[in-house]
Structures are given as C-alpha cells and as structure tokens.
Image (cartoon, rainbow, N blue to C red; front, side, top):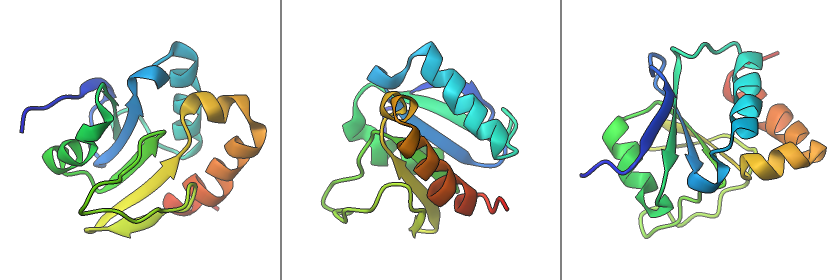
Length: 130
C-alpha cells in the first residue's frame, strides 16, 4: 500500500483517526475541528488528522494506520466490501473499529443544526461524554 494521505497534526496515541478531504483542509475548518476535539476532552497527542487527496483511498488508509476510532468528514466508505449506507452523526462499529460519519467541515460550520447533530448524536456517544 502506497500511503496517499497527508498527516496534518497529532500523534495518534489513542488511535483516533480523523480524515478530511482536500477541499475541507481550510484554516477555519481546522479551528472548528480542534474546538470539537477539545470539547471531547481530547489532546492533540490522542488523535491524528489526515487529509486524503483521493477519497477512494479511504479504506487503504484505514487499513494502513490501524485506528480504533475513525471520524470521516465528507468522505464516504462506499466500496464492494462496505456498501452499507450508514447514517451521518450516528456512531457504528465495523471490523472492531468505531466509525462516525459527518458532512464536510465546511457544511457543518455553515449549519448550526448539523453542528448540533454532530455533537449530540455523534461525538458525545462516540466518546462517552455526559
């Protein structure tokens, strides 16, 4: 597997992988993401944020990095092995990995209802936040 992702920040100690698309890699989106991760009581050392220039590489990247938790922003998991249309903002488990799917960070930042769903039904249950 030739890695086709760019690590933007983090040292992955808790094996939490956050994947974003090239289009979503904007400073204001990074700030939004960092605020959300801080609200989840996560430190930069806990996670790794990576940008996928080619979103078809998502499963290869996940297999390569072996995370325990994956957050996908605007990236879909559709391929033959994984053809289920999973709901956004609802954590699920697949191959012993916890997943959370979200709209792009750009969409979330522009829409308070999406931001609320991401927090209430997505991040809080995923990270057991009361």
